[in-house]
Length: 135
Image 1 (cartoon, rainbow, N blue to C red):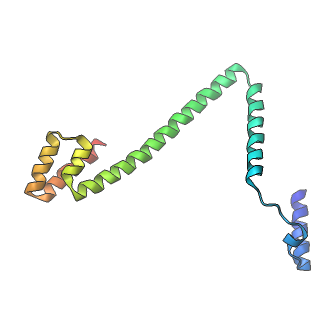
Image 2: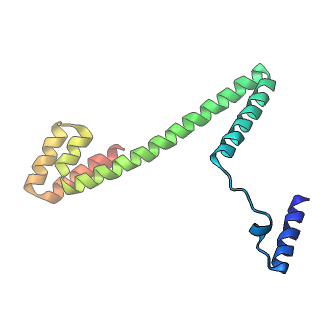
């Protein structure tokens, strides 16, 4: 019903060429209004929660744990892909440094350093293969 009244009001204002803001100023949402809305939503959720049985509460908690674990896994995937991208960039610039960051100072690092000192491309290929196959 209010939607139709609003449409009629806008049509009337445009027909009379009166700015709608001048006739009926719209109050912009403020931070206080947002806080009140949040408090109302929290209060409503708390009331709904208190009406649930113990079994339903347990099921809701279990569902929330699953959602939280999924969100954490998704966040780690994004973080891991960013780390991998940076590691590949470092490896392209300096293969032994990329290997040292990935695996530490091990036999793989020394082999990467030797291959890079002999010819850059074999050291680069070896390091990229190790890094990308390990993820």
